[in-house]
Image (tube, rainbow, N blue to C red; front, top):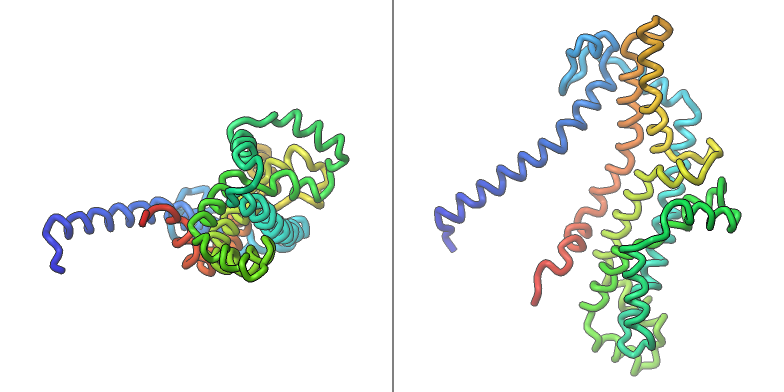
Length: 289
């Protein structure tokens, strides 16, 4: 089929807008990378934009030599893996029963779960609850309280709804129970949505620091984003000491940029492996047959 001139013009406009959005997302990251690889003098003179000026790796050496940063990166990876697996498990066992029309109280449970998405008790009641449960300052406090997202559960439930019920009914006629149906039929057919939600949960856990900020006082359990938050907040004091001659000029800025790259690149490397499934899962419901 030959495209009309209007269609070709529309494709060009869409491609141009996509290019602009890519540049808007990519240029700040390139700037941070360039600043992390530049000399302190170049940063002070504002000579760094998208390409390093006075190339050096001093900031990265400082970050890698600091055990708290390297351990926090490992600890964050452990948290991300455990949290993602647990979240997917909780999301699955919550969404799957709600697909059964014969489940007693299904509407009530649906309403109750969705209610929590719009209304919650708040930070202070959450803190008091975790304190009563003796979870404060323990690693479990960074995993359990936020292991289920209602929004993600709705996505998975919607995907389960699109799986033909005839498959489940056929399996039930052959004597398969609900768990066997889930493991043998629903999960193998749900790879796109599982990969998508895994990416959502992993990115959320990797970038999360507010729970650590509120519920964790042991520094050895700080995730990498918490350390980055503390580093950025301490920039004012570092800059003051720089002006008074107590630290090398511009070192704080290169150190901050290197830490940002150090904390960002690992999670970015995960996306290419899930891109195929992510596109399919993210467009769930966009096409109605």
